[in-house]
Structure formats: C-alpha cells, structure tokens
Image 1: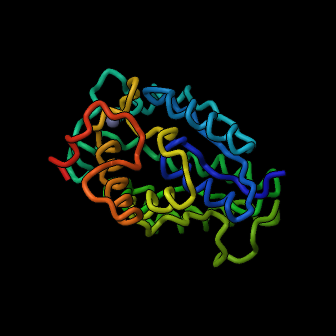
Image 2: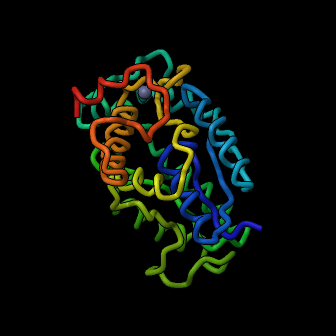
Image 3: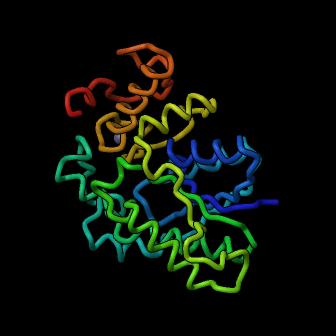
Length: 248
Ligand SMILES: [Zn+2]
C-alpha cells in the first residue's frame, strides 16, 4: 500500500530520491509521464527500476500534447531539431525547456495523491536546475504547494495549514554531485538510470544532461571514494567520455 506519490523519470535524480524514500521506510507510488519526449528510454529504465524495488508504477500518457508543446521549439518534444551539446550554462540549453512541464506533472501527481490519501508528493529537482528551468526554483515549488493545498482543501490528506509541505522537493538545495554522492551511499544502480536527451544506444556524453551527470558522478566519486580523475564508480557506457571536461 503506497503512502506517497513520487514523480519518477528513471533518471539519476528521481531514482536516488526513490531509493532514499524506500530506505526511510516510505512506499511511494511512482508516476512517470509520456509527454511525447523524443525517446522512451527513460520510461523503460523507470519501469525496470520500479520492478526491482517492487513499487507500484504508472506511466501517464500525455503524448497528445507533444505537438502543441513542440511549437515552443523545445528539442525534447520537437524531434525535427537537434539536441545541443555543451554545459547547462550555455544559452542554447534554453531549448531543452519544456513549457510548464513541472506544473503539468505536479498537478497530476497531486491529484493522484489526494485521490489515494497519500500524505505527500515528492519530486527530485535540485539547485543545478534553478538557473535554466524556472519550474525547478524554490519560489515555484512553494507556490505550487500553496496552490495544491488551496485547490484541495478538505480532501484526502491535504494539510489544513498553508505552511505545511504537501509537495516536497528534498533535493531543492542539493548540488547534483550531492545527489550522486547519496546514490553511492544508497547503492543506486547508476548504470540503470537514464539521463541522456538524445536516446541513442548509449548515453552520448555530450548533451547538457550527460555533461552534468558526468561532472556530478566524477565529483561524487572523488568525494565518496577518494578516487580522483576516473569514473570507476560510474559503470554507465558513454559514447564520449571526455567531452564534459572541455565544457565544465
Ligand atoms: Zn546525452
């Protein structure tokens, strides 16, 4: 019987979040979204990890909105455009923003939580997302929490006080490397998570999220294992293992 709802993409952040919840005795119901993203690899990774953990997992089909969102030029829903290589600090990375994605996903996850009397909704945004993604910033999370409480007063296990947290983003002030460090501590199967925007056979090692992932796992392995310079503790296969060093 689930006690909470977690938005679960099958990536490193949300997988670590779910492992963390399970390690604390929580039983999250996992919700993934098919919003017509340019590949489905993350969804199959999500399915695999959810099965491994024995958690209830649902993929919500929002694929019908991808054509409407693609007019934004977002490379994640418009497969006629190319995913940019480079670091998240570069201007081109704005093309990886999907309009209002987190509000859409949180609204649905919160509805599921209220319907099933779950006590909270978790999602895995972190401080590295703040710069480029407005819907990952603390003010947005706070506003979404307030709106969810107001919109569901008297239903499910919605708290009565606006000061309570129903929507929880425990990594909101973490660095990506902090999440990677926690992943090592919790024995998260890092190589089974999927981050790459391109969705090829292997992680490309060059897109914004691959660069961020490589940098974070490298920093975390240095911190956790005291091993510098080698990605010994990231068994993920990358097509390009060295590019990230040139852009961070
Ligand atoms: Zn990539």
